[in-house]
Image (cartoon, rainbow, N blue to C red; front, side):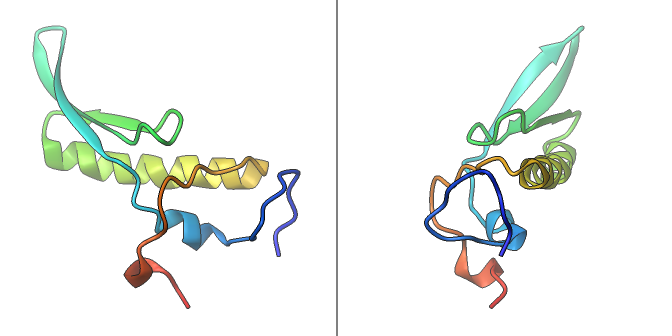
Length: 92
């Protein structure tokens, strides 16, 4: 069990939150005359990445998602869970 300052009905490990299927938003944005792909998980505060290609943006976003989740976990902050985790991704 992980003690935190946040009251939760059920205590989950970090892998549980890493398996949550967050809403993904991707768009093309122009920055100083160049087009970039911006990917973000709007349900995770500050979780976004930009890159020249969609594939790179998604790869960068995955690293950022894990960083944001780890940071929230380490600080004991409540992690948003908008929908249940994917069962195939969870460790049992």
